[in-house]
Amino acid sequence: MKSMNQFHARQLFCWHAFLQSSPLLGYEDLVEKVITVSSGLPLSLKLFGAQLYDCFNKDLWEEVLKKISRILSNDIINRLKVSYDALDNEEKQMFLDVACFFIGKDKTTAIAVWEGSSWSAQWGWKSLVNKCLVEVDNENKIRMHDHLRDLGREIARTLSLYRLWSPNQFTDIDRQEKVRGMILNAANNDVHKFPGSLWNTSLWFCGFKIAKRPFCNELRVFVLGENYENYLNIIKSSRELAWLSCTIIAHRNLPSWMPLKNLRVLELYDCYKIVGLWKDGVEVQAPVQLRVLIISSCNKLERIPKSIGYLKNLKRISLSSCNVKRLPEEFCRLQSLEHLQLRECEWLTVLPTSFGHLTGL
Image 1 (tube, helix red, strand yellow):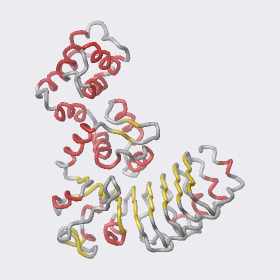
Image 2 (image 1 turned 135 degrees about the vertical axis):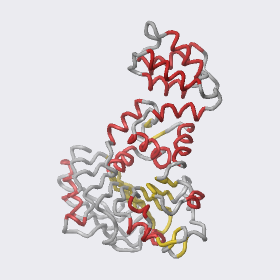
Image 3 (image 1 turned 135 degrees about the horizontal axis):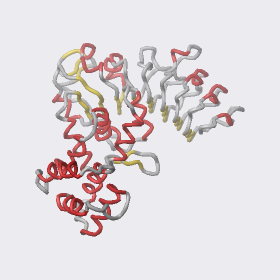
Image 4 (image 1 turned 180 degrees about the vertical axis):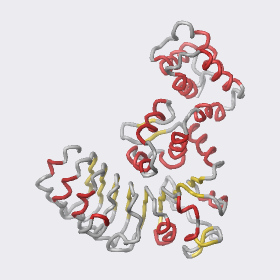
């Protein structure tokens, strides 16, 4: 995108720095300097304006200007890193998560995963939005400028806590490092396979047994685009998973060893044998921390367990192409439920009598 002219560049920056279209009295020269070192690029103007918002110390303005000015005008990524460096540690981790995992995902999913990591999710998210590092579209999907995405992924590559969003990264994992998240399917839904030299019968990864891998202790994001049985040892060993997305679970119910205790987001696709979910009757068998439940093309799924009523924090449910015949009355205890999608559930002909109790919907 071409640089903005001086007039429009000044307006854009001032709206973010002062919440008005012109500089505050006494800040005119400083504003002109920012526009010059930003080369009139809209993204830079927004970021630096958001960073300097509510800052009425001219010495701090000069300090930021010096940082920006030391970087060549055509080195966009390094210039944007000034905004990243101003974040606290949790905000930095959330920024990297968005760049690697959450672009195009529902905001509810990201917040849920961060809560499952014991982070101040709402506060951190608000900070990222206020600093113009992330955006949400009118469908509640997370968006991030391509330059910021590239910045985040470049930083993520240098850290010892790995974030893996591309299959060619697996060759770079050091045996002693830990992994925060793994995305094993492409954006176009084509499945990426592990290179044959790295994976053998689900027991070995990078040359040694998964069950002894230290990275499982930190794993919070595990998104699969293929049969989950290839990765059983990772799932079994990752007791603190916050987001699990699986394809083709060949069981009638979710296996008892599946890590549900800390799970905040559960997605099931093409699980052709599943007729129920978790076993009913005992509260602890239900993923009581769950915030998001997405089930698609599980065409033998006939029942939703009554214990779903225990999921007091559940905010979003999507059922599509399932043979669910009825929702239990306990479903109507979900006072936190905000979004319910029922699509191509042809056998579902009636809703529970207490459906009107879902006041958060």
